[in-house]
Length: 274
Image (cartoon, rainbow, N blue to C red; front, side, top):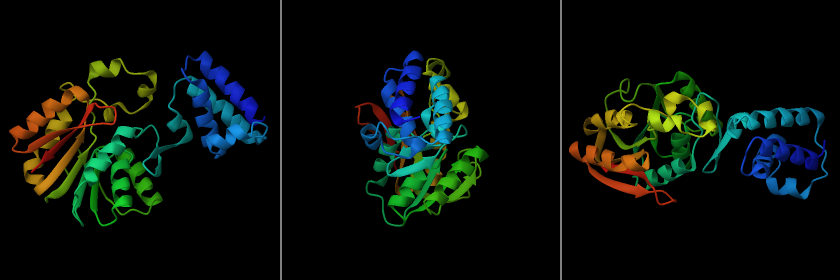
C-alpha cells in the first residue's frame, strides 16, 4: 500500500459512514499512525507504507467509521504544546480547556498552591506545571484509572504533581490553595442523549452530573470558603447557559464572580475570586 491508496480507501470508508470531511479525518489518522506530518503526507502520495502499518491503518479506519474518536484510536491527544495519553478511562481534552489554562495563569503568583478537581487525563495540571515549574500542584479524581493515566502523563513530561484519589475535596488534606481549576462533568442527562455518537465512547462519569449538570460544581464551591486562600481564584469550565447560575451561586458563598468568553464568544468560564 502507498499513501495515495490509503488516503483513497479512508476517504471512501468515512464518506460512506457519513463524515462531513472524510479527507481531514483520514489524514489525521494516517499522520498519527505513520508519525508523518499531514503536509508531508500530501507531498508524498507514492510513499510506501510498511505492511504491518497498512493493516493497522485499515483497522483504525474501520474503528473511526464506527465513530470511535480518533484520539482513542491513536492513544494520544494534543493539548497546548503537549501530546497526552488518552484512553476510554478519561475525557479527551478539548480546545476550550486550553483556554482555561490561560485564564488560570493570569496574575498567578510565584510558588502558588494549585489544585485541579476532576483532573481526568491530567491535562490541566501537566500543562500548568510545564509552563510554570514553580507551582505546587495537587490533582484529584474519583476515578483511580483516570489518576493512573494522569500520572503517566505527568511522568511523560517530568512534571511533579501530587495526585490524590478523592471525590472532589473529600480526601484532600486540610489547607488552602491560591488557584482552584475545575473542568468537572457539567452535561445534563437530556443534553447527553442528544450528543454526537463519538461522545458515547467517553466515560459518562466524566461528562454528566445531576441537577442539570450543576451538581458537582456547586459541591466544589460549597467548600471553597475554607479552601481558597485570600486573594485566590477558582476557574470553572462549564456550559454556556450554566454560567449565570454558577456565578450567582459563587456570590451567594461570598465570592466575586466574573464570566469569561471562549474564543467562539460563548460563556464558557466562571471565575470566582476570594
